[in-house]
Image 1: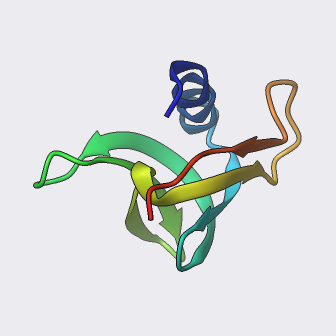
Image 2: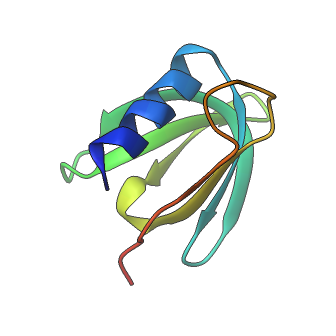
Length: 82
């Protein structure tokens, strides 16, 4: 993942954007909360869905779309690992 893409996702977390995240196998929608490392030292995006926190491994994400209007980005296309 490019540093610029990570920076945009961090902005989404700081401003609590609602995001649609597409991975290799699933699509998620929720409020961006944080970027953390899980117990396997994999960088993950944390989103809030229905009052529960979900960690999504960033290396599986192919696309992030901001559902919250903002001046920073609309869609980020990433190269997810298969």
